[in-house]
Length: 298
Image (cartoon, rainbow, N blue to C red; front, side):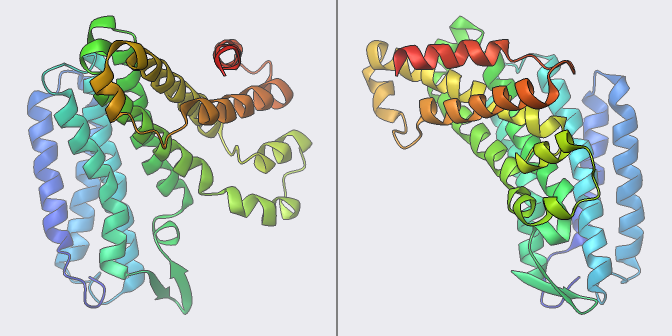
């Protein structure tokens, strides 16, 4: 691939194709089959390019290969995620499968650094990694998918009183991890807003105001609510631990301020919905309920 890189992308695509085949054997929701087919097709096309050696001497082509691998990986892991969600995160294997999925979704950024280093020159232009290799939207998608996976798991466990008690420590860890990934997703484009929103071609003042807030899509807005809810669940479980379980209390990371972080996320969510997108299907009643509970206990 790129100079001095020891990454064998042919092997990466071959392994991903094998993973598709394994998933296909155990998949229950055949509606997800098109995603697997799409991923397999992408892998085969990229594998053909790798076998011809076109990516080993051309950094621009190498970037496209890594992007293609990331797109295929996002599709494959989404199928597995959907199966976990549909099965309500089975107790016997959820922790292992979540760890595996997060590791897989961590891979593209690590791959970029391993192949290209901290920066790469393409067509005379110096690009810094990984955002300019993978692209803003793909990097946001990777962070969103990891954060949303933790959210769905935490939502399932928190609303099951038995599992919440048995898996309290893991729930706390997953909530923190989920918030970190969503915060990462929300911050990727924020610096660009301050520099570029005044030069945008968008004439709608409401749309420009959303850009100023760093809300580029419905997904960004949903990420605020998801992050706020995970902070709330972390706070509730931590509160219970303070009275019910001294050993668990000692394991709680005191550096994570779930109340302050949750308040920040949810206040921003409520403000954006109330002032910018109200009447477009968004509801902030749950966010306000949580904020009221935060305020009463702070």
